[in-house]
Every structure is written in structure tokens, then in C-alpha cells.
Length: 210
Image (cartoon, rainbow, N blue to C red; front, top):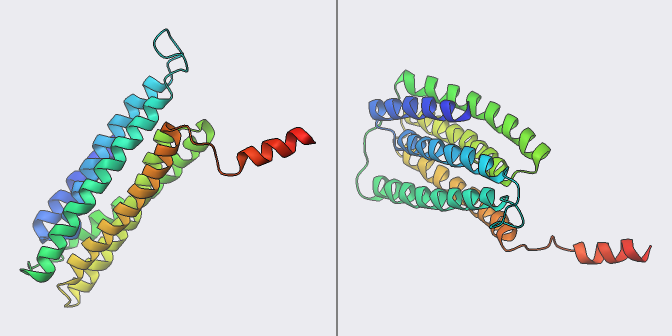
């Protein structure tokens, strides 16, 4: 259902972005397309991770989830860099007119409602199953909620006569995407490298001594 929702949101944002000329909305559409891809990757990664240990994978297949989350991290950084470039071009090279059409506001508000639902649902399942891939997806949708909010704020300012607000909103979206990617990537690398939680050795020692 999350994949279906991502596809619907992406189409809506793309149409609204093309009609309005909003970079923030087009960035959100690209982000949505990324969501469709990463949600699909997560779906197959979770299915693969459920397989028991075999002759080739003595410790099971759980790292499939971490690899999927690492791919998501790389895609997030790539998207952030592209949006920053486009926003800087609009701010310093050529201002592109933006028309805050009503459908843009409808699409963004609907997207925020769906992203909030997906974030809460996936966060709950990720906690229950200790799934890194689902946690990554939940983080992604939390970022989507905030970035859609930034796009909405940008369009409101454009409607009140501040055309640069759209590009500034796109910059904010890109920065937020990059921060989310950094946090996710750091956690995933710790898992792939089997990094022990900070301070765990001391706590184990204390427990053993007691």
C-alpha cells in the first residue's frame, strides 16, 4: 500500500509541478519517484531478509535490509545535490515564473496527510520487528512530510508576491533530504560494519560483575 501511495503522490505532484512551474513541487515529484523505487527495494529486501540461514549465508539474510537502506541513502544524496543545483540556478541565474494554481495546494495537503499515515504505520512495524529497511522507509516518509510542508509554505509566499520563495523552499527540501540521508547512512554503515553500540562493553562488564 505504501508503494501504491507513493505512485499516486508522485503523479499528483508531477502534474501540479508542471502546471505551476514550481521547482519545489517538481523536486517533490522526483522525491516521490525515489520513494516508489526505494519502497519497492524495501519490499523485496524485507522478503529476502526473512529467509533462514543456509550453506552460503551462515548468519541468515538480515543484511539484505541494510544493503537496501544503503542504496536509499545514496539516492537521497543524489537527489539533494540535483535539487540544490536547480534551486541555485533559479535564484542566481534566471528566475522562473511560478503560478500557485489551486491544484498544487490540494496535492501538497493530501500528500502530507498520506505521508503522516505512512510514517506512523511503518515506524510502528519497524519498532516491532527491529527492521532497518522499514525504519529507513519510515524516516524517508517523515522527511517527505516536512519537505511537502516546505513546498506548501513556499507556494503561499509566491502567492503573496515573493517569487524567490519557491526556489528557497526547494533548497530547504534539499538540505532536509541530505540530513536525512546522512543520519540513515551513518546508522546503516554501523550495522554493516558490525559496530557495537557506544558504551555497551562497559555495561556488559558491570552486569557480569553484579
